[in-house]
Image (cartoon, rainbow, N blue to C red):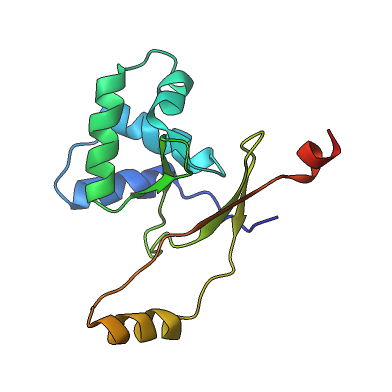
Length: 147
């Protein structure tokens, strides 16, 4: 199974918002609190359900957009047309990959990654700069294989 960073403190997270001159509204704080306890990315709808009516879905989307621009959350697409968000640590670029079961949608974080030299070679070959990548793996988990 993948490694997951220790839960960041909610006060540290809200202080990151404040230091960028953003108010810590109730919804922003609630979203940060849910995401910091989650080992895997959540969709806006899943977040809204976990907040149990504390705010409307539009507010969840707006808050996630702000948190993404502040690089406090990272967006993921697992190939099912649903955008998911995961908390990014203060001194972390949030770069890791996931292994997703095509049947039950179980998500495993994996730390293996391509060496930066591969990105550099690809960039140089095509005249690009500041190349990054996003990669997710899909398969059948052991439970779904047994079924």
